[in-house]
Image 1: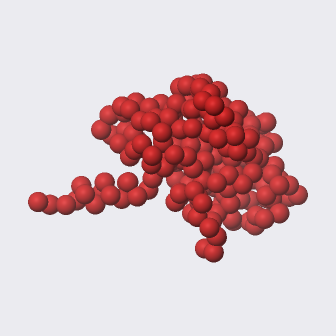
Image 2 (image 1 turned 180 degrees about the vertical axis):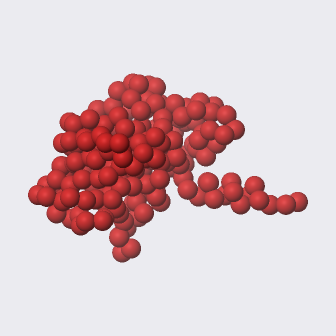
Length: 200
């Protein structure tokens, strides 16, 4: 489990694409806190750490993850949001996240508002789209960052980034047109399933 509080902004140092998937090598100061087999959220995607050497460690990314997330677009030099799995005795500062990406959004707009930056994300509407789970003042993870929704309509939503988030995550350097991983509030998905199963 994760909380969406990014612990380090890592750097992708190598991407090896093979017939079996892809191997990402990341450099981060978190390496000395990671063991072989540990779960790490990389831009919000739960991956298993392997090949730890110095400040570098790797991840085997299977085709399913490459199809359903923006990890397929990463190249050497990319900055990625990293979070270690939550310990049972730790404070839950963001919101409950699984590292299971629900879909990909596209940055549609950026606007400064005082010291914050408003980011508009297109997420696809309709009855089967992700936006049915998104509510104003609710939580959503964008590239693994726990954020509060400030506006939502039929096709997009807004989040506001404070200076701390702009500095400590890759959202500070995001541009219009970039794809981002989205994970909606898991509670909303469980509620939908339970309500859908109720018989009058």
